[in-house]
Image 1 (cartoon, chains in turn orange, cyan):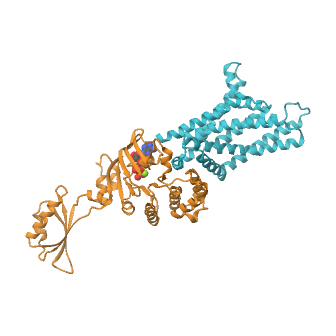
Image 2 (image 1 turned 180 degrees about the vertical axis):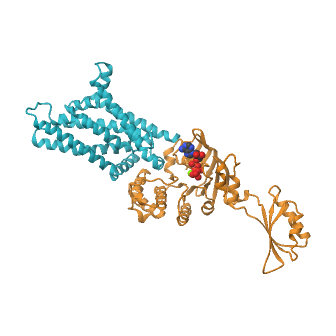
Image 3 (image 1 turned 45 degrees about the vertical axis):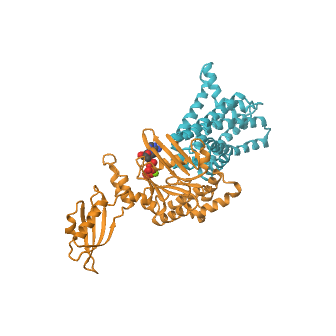
Length: 326
Length: 249
Ligand SMILES: Nc1ncnc2c1ncn2[C@@H]1O[C@H](COP(=O)(O)OP(=O)(O)OP(=O)(O)O)[C@@H](O)[C@H]1O
Ligand SMILES: [Mg+2]
């Protein structure tokens, strides 16, 4: 549905997006992830046809946005960041205007508006003036607008920004639901959002694409830096045995209360060494010390860790970084 | 075409559900009423009337400076928000990502402004009705005068639309428009100041006052129609290019 090739966009001297390429297939829900100022909104604005690319090619539903802009825009529903709306209009008036603008045939307009309001959960607000709506409802009206022409592709820029936790849950459920019969590309800087709604993520940072893949693939990019062990160790000798192993530090050792000879250990592995080799050495050292290994689990890197590892900047390049890794 | 109609209807609705158009209509009608009243009382006190200067000719023609001053107030106020507000609030992003061309957005908005302008003038037709009760009305004069006003309004609104597209601030758009339109008005006044020559001819050509004086005699001067039309088209054309250029911002 979306093919982006070597997309670059600059605002005069500021290069917001540099050489980004990716594609989104039919029926996928893809998260577009990056810290503040990474260039997410800029990229989505180019895809939606609001901004022209400085260089590179973008195809939406098979249409080159530079050569057939109207056909490309017909195929997509776009919700800009912060959901701008006309405050003086009523919800139904606004959606009627949008349906006309998006060439929904006259006879289908009422049904299209009703359907969009239903899905976005704003049917009971149809007669309300937009200026009187809460932030959450405005967001939903903007979403209904994106849906009104029933496009096969939705591009949503931070659809949950500024919502309370209940509304965030509702919107995520809605996005998942929408994703069942269409393609969705949504931007966010919240990882749990991607984990909750998306099958795949594209991570950009300072205008460059830094990673792309399913959530599992992204997790796997971060090498395991720890081990969790369950052992039979009646004499509490494991720590002593492990000090001899190069590249291992014991983070904690806990004796289980129900069974005094069972212990739980958490080990840290030196990131500079190959985790597999170190794990093997750990097993050998423990076995040699007569300690029975019941379970050995490599620590899963959380998506947060992956994200901060991918977008970690040198302090000189981005002094504001600390806020994002926190 | 679809996009044009949708934009036109929305713009018209927004103009009339917000207080702006109503405030302008009220101010406008109060001012026109005052002007017309003073002209009528002036004529009523006159002992003899000549053939080609009736109250209508005075209102639309010789005394048109008053009427044009109110236009210099009303037109910039009508156009100031048309693009500036869309850009300030960000709704321009939803508008331009719909399958519409910049030209239909500009034309839709402009047509709504011109319609509103015509609606604001409509109540003044009552003056003509009032005059008819007491005397003879020359319909040629009435028709030509309103055509002249339409031409001036079309040009002013087009310039105002362009100014509104140049800035995100309504206030700056208002001031810019007043500056440009007042400037063109002052240039027209040059007709009465300069010695005969090329410069005076130019001033006369752009003068809204002498346009109204001609039209109020029932004279349809084609050069003036062409001039108003050219200013209007040029303004709309440049506005379309400006809207298009936002993609490269
Ligand atoms: N209109 C503009 N003119 C100049 N620079 C801009 C403009 N819009 C964005 N930028 C710059 O481009 C870069 C990318 O901005 P963008 O809005 O795409 O980031 P983002 O990933 O959407 O961030 P956020 O999470 O805060 O929304 C930033 O450095 C920003 O300052
Ligand atoms: Mg953004």
